[in-house]
Image 1: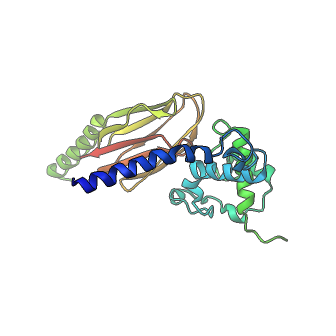
Image 2: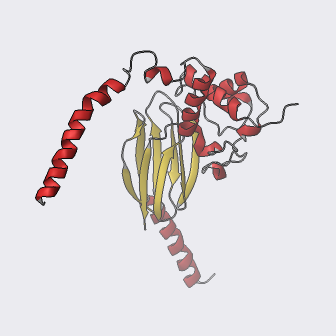
Image 3: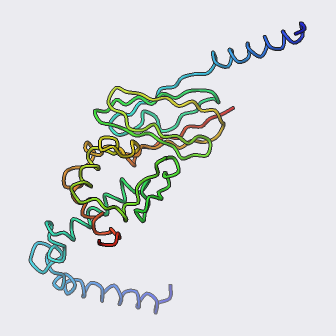
Length: 141
Length: 108
């Protein structure tokens, strides 16, 4: 490296060191209102439930019901009847939670829908129901 | 049927019986939300018994070209078997636990 290059590198390092305290003081602490925590959705809000429910859906349901929740997941071809098109479901949230917990067979629906009661917590189940409600595209009667 | 025909039928029956006798059964258990092995090599005609040793249900399935199947949900102590009748690579998953995977190589 030339001497000019060394001087430039040293100047950059010095500038970085000089700016560090400034950057640290500009960042709000995480545990105070207005900090990063304050930017999050309130935990009990419906939006937070929908967000969490979307994560549950992506992890557990997408294989059969598909990324668009239209029943066209990659495993859908294994099943007859095919997985439900959840976007067009006419069921209410209580029914969603029930069939998620107990599986399809217990409710006289497809035996291929597994019971998730042992895998998902009540909060996850309710979040998932909230997410399914949020993406429902069935025309209102 | 002449003697040659009878001998041919007898040979075919013996071959079929030999195949049945030599086909092996492998056991892959599910415990702690994991398969007991990550990879298994079996021969065409072999059977794999999927045994659930967890206190909750598993739903084992595969979408592989060499073997597509869905065993449905089954609980603790129960097992379901699959016979692999075609050579190839079969990726087996659990519908309830997305992190569970085992690869079964089916060889001739």
